[in-house]
Amino acid sequence: AKADAMGNALSAVGADMSALTINTAGIAVYNNSQFTFTPNFIFTNSEGTFDGNQRNESRLGFNISNIGFVGSIPVNRTVKNISFGLSWNGTNDFRQKTTVSANDQGGSILDFIVYNENAGRPSAFREDLAWNAWLTNQDNGTGEFWSFVTDDGTYGIDQRKEIRTRGGMGEFDFTAGMNIGDMLYIGGTIGLASINYKDVSIYTETGFPDIY
Image 1 (cartoon, rainbow, N blue to C red):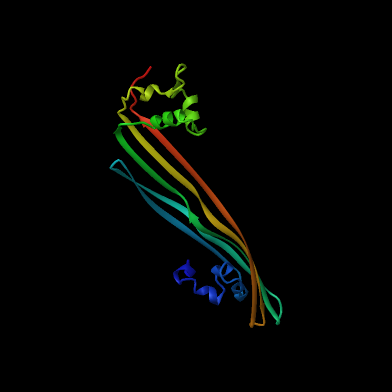
Image 2 (cartoon, rainbow, N blue to C red):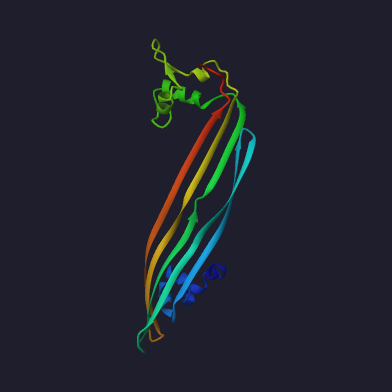
């Protein structure tokens, strides 16, 4: 957190946890061990508009921005010390929720599904699901697809879609460095990036007329 507040200026000097990823030789400046832990509270706000209806969603979350440890081992007069460090740096947080909705819509997603089926372009993630759920049917005589729900054009349907994203990005770093006579500082870092992303989309329609 201190390095962020100073625009990472400490990285040029070293002996700061930010040196593990920006100026790896800076770890050799450490004369003793250090443990750091930086928690974050994240507030997100999203806005969605559908057919003139606006909805806001706010969420408060917690994550770990940084956690790390640096150890320094004295050696001799020539090699002053050997230092090593392990750290985790969070770089992105994907947690968000967006919701849009509208009432009394003059249409249904089944109109689009029936259109795709009759156009010969069904999707296993949409049209096939509707077919297996008995939401669409096929006329044995004409071969055309149709739906009980939309066939008479009586809708009055309320529609709602919710999109939730979760996960984050970060990097594990292992750094080692050496201080030679307080004149030469050598260091290197191995970083392993981590990405976790999940997207859930929920679409609902309510207010269908009785069809059976």
